[in-house]
Image (cartoon, rainbow, N blue to C red; front, side, top):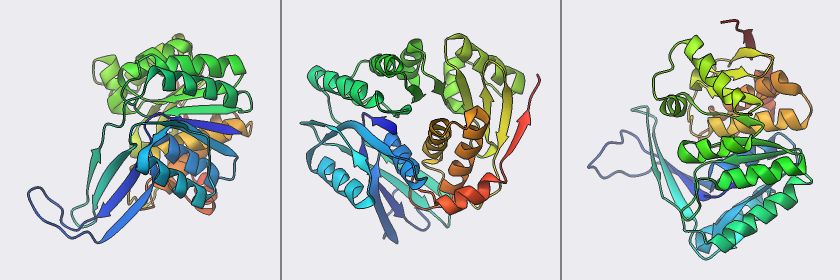
Length: 311
């Protein structure tokens, strides 16, 4: 089984709007709504790939009830900590004509220390029956920057593999607990490094520092250009197949999902990287965030290339 953790779940609403711009009034051509937050996107892709997955995190209010209703309709399992606050709504405005993409992200509810401990206890329990536990997205309000570190500690103690996909202080504190894998993107990595990481040699040095901190698999996401993957023994680039991208929001979550599935199936780092890249590429072809068809993933899997690097 795979467990996904999302402290800041949401209803993700996608608006399809032609010729969208500021200071105007527009009629929306199409509205797509789904249970979201990065970890729920991960859970959905894992579910689509045919693996058993359970989603946990904080949920509250009418929005939270709607999220649970959507997940039930999709056949997705959940075991949330229910809080008093209202779960958030996030909006993604896609303009097919202007080829623009605009996101509006609510901050999310406040969480009490009592609720925080409830989630630590729940993750500890779920990790005991999980091969992989993913931790994705921003910390909702009320949680200390080191909260993910607490989760990673109980995941490691349970013998599961922890994948951390976050940024900023939550990432800096989280890696202190030595997650199995991390996946910053280019912008996040440059913020952490404090300087541009344009050359492969600089990117490799950044990944090596992550490995030195105790991470076993360090991935640098390069968006449409693929990803760099470093372990104690290997350093390679995974190159995605060409697809007609429609919506790239959630592709990073699909990558995490594919990697988690690959690890859970015992396919090793290279196999997990290939599946992750195929899932991310398939996700880019859908209007809805964090969606992919297993048939397309399997087709694209044969087109993913690995390039060994020796810088």
